[in-house]
Image (cartoon, rainbow, N blue to C red; front, side):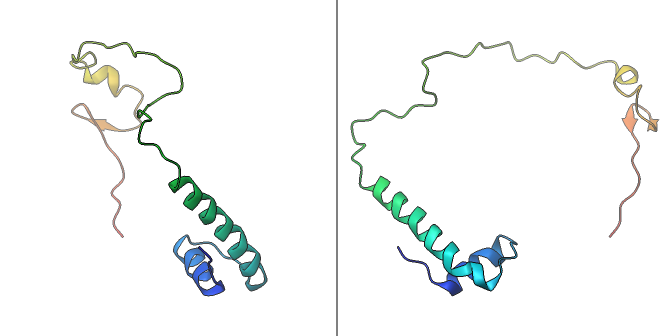
Length: 95
């Protein structure tokens, strides 16, 4: 897939990047190369490859799903600069 200058300008705008006009052509070439490489990956036959979440075989430890940090709001909010009835007080933000 080949990207033109206007497409790269639009991508830069959507990504909120300020790309100078003299850098659009080289960037279009680089992005086109990346897209061509991704297209090549799509041609690889992965029908017999099992999906995996990690390259190392491992099992993660499980813990009981119980609440362990409740019942003491004063200790939780003790370092808050401003609090009321066990809650943090924050400045009102209105735009």
